[in-house]
Image 1: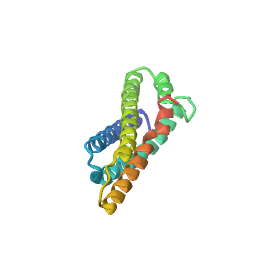
Image 2: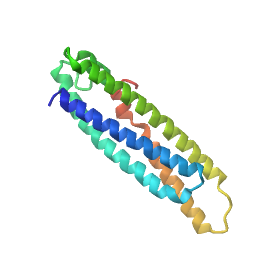
Image 3: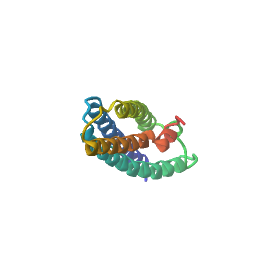
Image 4: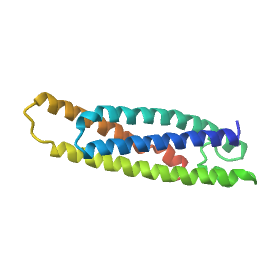
Length: 165
């Protein structure tokens, strides 16, 4: 293991965050358009993106712990700490760039998730009375699933690794 493996893992994590952001933005478009029947699919997409991201987060934790120990840091060192301890050369700058991009993506995901929760809650309140009770129950279930998936986007391990906690 080494810095190149950590960098590759950080790239994968960035791509997973971009995918999660896309899924959240797509869900938000459907919510705002009143397409609650699509929320079963958007929620599944968010859940799948989170699952993939969790796998990459675990891999990153292993890689970052190894490199942190190699560079004489605590195994739970944050990315800024690892970047500052990197040997001279390309690694300090590359790890700082990963940090900047991950922070930006993390904040965008936070913003998109908050907008989704707000819109989903408003959608729940604004649902029109319908003569079809079964359709209303399905819409409620879709909204609840989407809310649950969206609320799982807090990403505390990433927040801690980025030094934002």
